[in-house]
Image 1: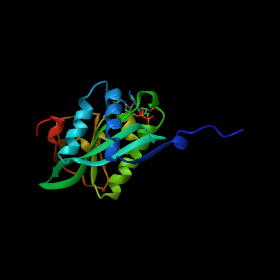
Image 2: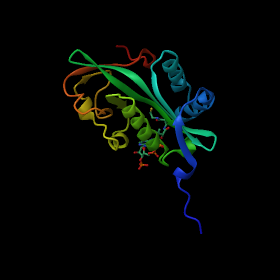
Image 3: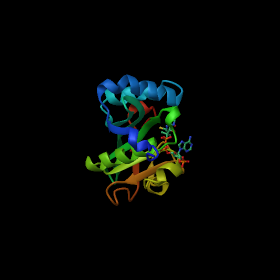
Length: 176
Ligand SMILES: CC(C)(COP(=O)(O)OP(=O)(O)OC[C@H]1O[C@@H](n2cnc3c(N)ncnc32)[C@H](O)[C@@H]1OP(=O)(O)O)[C@@H](O)C(=O)NCCC(=O)NCCS
């Protein structure tokens, strides 16, 4: 008897390559039920905001995608090397099987290796708190969002101590 099949046996993660883009667009359109996020992803890439982009592959099929974009964060007049984690999508028939978790884990690892200092996210508190994100760390940041879903993670200890300001890249359409 063989051991039970685990998701890790068949799903692999790697950086996005341009030939993935049609599949990434299909995936996001399906996961979000419309084209808004695919358009956002294209605009972020085209305008030079995309910093880290990963795909999850099941054999040759794209079943997950994560983008981390550059984010303008200033504290005490000093700019931080910060990212926002958005958007992320997993194929509807492959959700709640750990693919999203794997994408976030590898995305944050790539951010650490790239020398990024902090990551900001708007998302489910239960999901992102597993990676160390907290609303408390984001609470002193002036931003278009507030509350428990607006969370931050320091990749360099202490960088988010103090009052600051977050300005999202123009493609997010959040003003500045
Ligand atoms: C959100 C999303 C990327 C998560 O990916 P995933 O592969 O399903 O997530 P994982 O299996 O790794 O982790 C599951 C955890 O995510 C959280 N989660 C996933 N979907 C959720 C939902 N709809 N509501 C609340 N929590 C959710 C839960 O904490 C869940 O843990 P549990 O299964 O123990 O309850 C995926 O569900 C998705 O593509 N959703 C549609 C698009 C979207 O909303 N993207 C996020 C906004 S950018």
